Structure formats: C-alpha cells, structure tokens
Image (cartoon, rainbow, N blue to C red; front, side, top):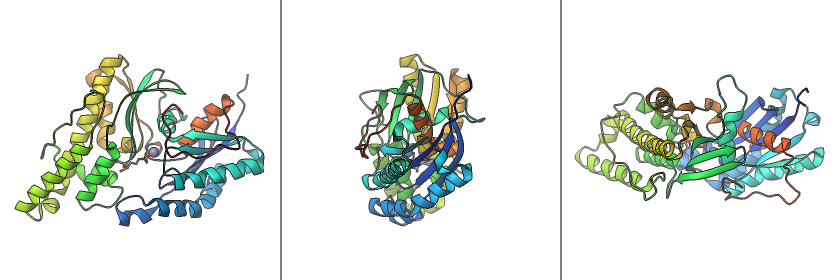
Length: 343
Ligand code: KG4
Ligand code: ZN
C-alpha cells in the first residue's frame, strides 16, 4: 500500500528562537529559525523581549518555511506548535498563532512537548542520522534540562536520572558569563576549548545521592572561587588563560556526563545511547560519545547539528507521529510553562 503524503507546518517558540518547519511525513522540507540577538547584551534571555521578538518574527518565519518547502497552506494537513515547557510569554505567541491558523484553515491542531521533540528529532529521516531502536537511552542536555531517559516508545519516557539544581547548559552559559563572554556562552566555550589544554585545570565531579542524577550548582561556584583566587594573583588571568579554562571546564563537564551515561548503561543493560538538546551540539560531547562505540561497545546516535538546538523540525516529527495516532489538540488547548516528559 502506498504511504499517504502528509504535510504538517510546525512552530517552535518556547524560548528565544522563533522556528517554523514544513515536514512531508518524516522528512524535512524546510526548517527556518530566527534567533534573537537582543539577549546577548543582557547576559541571558529577557522573557518580555523574547515574547516581543517572537511577535515580530513569526509571520515572516512561517511565510519563509512555506515558500522554501514549496507548499501552499491549503495543502497542509495539520498545524503543530510547542505547548511547553518554556517561557509563558514566548509559548503564547506560537500557541495563539497556531490555533488561529488551524481554525482558519479548518485543519487539526497538534500540541507538542518540547522535550519529547528534542529526543524524537532522531527519527527525522536524514541520510546522516540513524534511528535508534526501542528501548534506547537518551541524555537530553539543554539550557533548561539535564536528564537521562529510557525511551521505550515514541510516547513512553522514563526518567532514570536528572539534575537536582542547574541544567548543564546553564553550567556552560554561567561559566561563560564569569569569563566575560556573551550569551549564549556554550558555543563560545566550545570554540575556545579547541585551542586549549583540557588538563590545564581540574574541577571535581559533584556527588549526588542517586548515581544517575546531576548537580551543577556547586560546580559553577567552584569555578567562580577558582577564578577569583587566580585573579587575585594575576588580574589578567582570564585573558591569558581563556583557551585553557574553556578546555578544562568543558572537559570536566563532558567527563561528568559520560560517567553518568556509563552507569546508566550498566544499570539498565541498554547500550543504544543517544544525546539530544542544545548542548548535544558540543563538539567534545559528540566526539567522546562516538568514541564509546569502540571503547564500550555502545551503538551511539548523534543528532544532525541543526536538530540539536531549538528548531521547529523536531516539533514537526512528533506532530507526524501524533497525526498518525489521531492525537489532536482541542479548542481549549493552551500553553503550559511546566510540562513533564510524558505529558
Ligand atoms: O535546546 P536549546 O537550544 O534550548 C533549550 O531548550 O534550553 O539549548 C540551549 C543551550 C544553551 O545553554 C547553549 O549555551 C547550549 O545549549 N549550547 C552549547 C553549544 N551549543 C549550544 N553548549 C555547549 N557547546 C555548544 N556547542
Ligand atoms: Zn530546547
């Protein structure tokens, strides 16, 4: 039987990126993202400014996604949007837009959980991605989340471990801020780390009662004290050692993540291991996970770079699975800033 062709428009607006994508079944026809430079000056995302920027960006971004896909809105079978978790003012822009469009076009509305979307981005049909078999382990590492999940089906996620305080993305971004780098600092730490010595400075691994949990708040404070101590001796310490500091901090974070992942594999007996979320764009995390194939005998799944940080294509793939199951939103469906992984 020939597979029916379904076109879905998806919208992502949970934080500071406005995204729209058109998928044809599980393939991406277009994936447009408009970042918001305005936050760099403030050292973090300013919710009110993010919401306003989404309002300015959403129409041109959706327009471009349809144009690039070569799809007329009358061909769409559903409109998907990020329901949560995220910043309320940001989520509401995408939610209102998606609801109005689905109402006007008289087609179903599909609410999508942003964290499920990061994980299920692995199922987008792409030459560079191989799709993990169920069950697999996924470490979701982003600006707001740090979790190790056992994924047993498209809609069955079990949290094996998670952060008890800060997310790993925050550890990158807050360290970058201490180093005087603009927001978001993760990609810059990654860049400077390439030129530095990862063994130059050592930062100890935080302990947690559950061996699969994470804690980054003490880690960040340790870096703050380390920098204060060194700057007392030499005011130019950061400037002179930027590459080495970045390489050492990054290496410590990657070691923390990999040690937890090794324990999760050991405890679960599952050795299909994926990473997802903005921090999975990190080059050292990607190469270290890959090296576990030889070192530990794992099969690893590393998302295509453009599906790591926030994007609408990942919202579209979840929407496609939900469409096949006829899981649609209702008229009173609304955004929720907190949403757990199975909601
Ligand atoms: O998934 P994401 O785009 O947004 C959230 O859902 O939070 O993740 C954003 C996070 C930020 O903390 C950013 O600094 C981090 O991902 N990030 C990176 C890299 N690229 C993005 N962290 C380390 N290395 C990178 N190359
Ligand atoms: Zn995200």
